[in-house]
Image 1 (cartoon, rainbow, N blue to C red):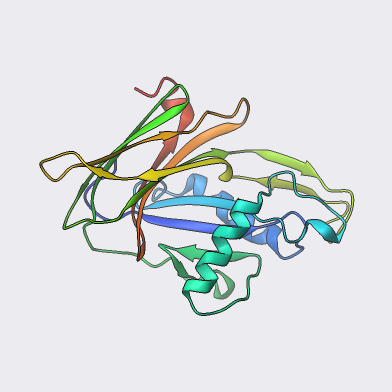
Image 2: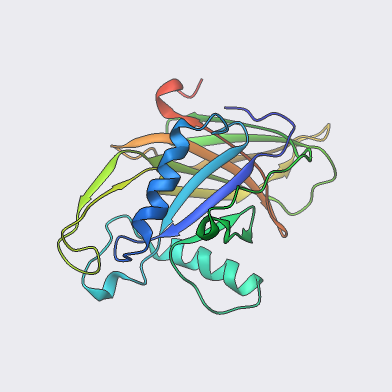
Length: 223
């Protein structure tokens, strides 16, 4: 997969099967599957958090590290509170979904990001538009068409569907490879089932810089 030089927004949703306000947000995220901007200017990922798990229903997709990611964002914004559904665009809190606002767009150029998944690893190559320092590469396998029959908690009796759900995540430091190119090789075994897409992004201290993504079925061998 490969981005163009224009900036591709990383759209993160922090969600939980234990939250009754989350299903509408997840349905909206799932509708991006039919949006022509998908992978071209928007890469959506859904991180399931675990702080609702003690209220009657354990979310099978939740991981403590996804909660830690949301809390790190909150701390960077100068607050200690977290909530679901919570949207983040390129590292910044985005409340536009609650107001049915349009996703923020970017006209800037970030550089070309390429990624290749082979076996249990993802090779990342980034040619930034400007100077780069202290950057990290991230990759996540995403689940599509996932279904959960919730029996307890706030969503008891509901059949929940999930798209772009993060199933596994890998990260590593970018290293200069000469001629303005930065690379990283990430350990990221592909989940046995339901890994329908791959998302890759570059982060610096200011947040995500560039993203790329694509359907796994279009590139089954990582070529």
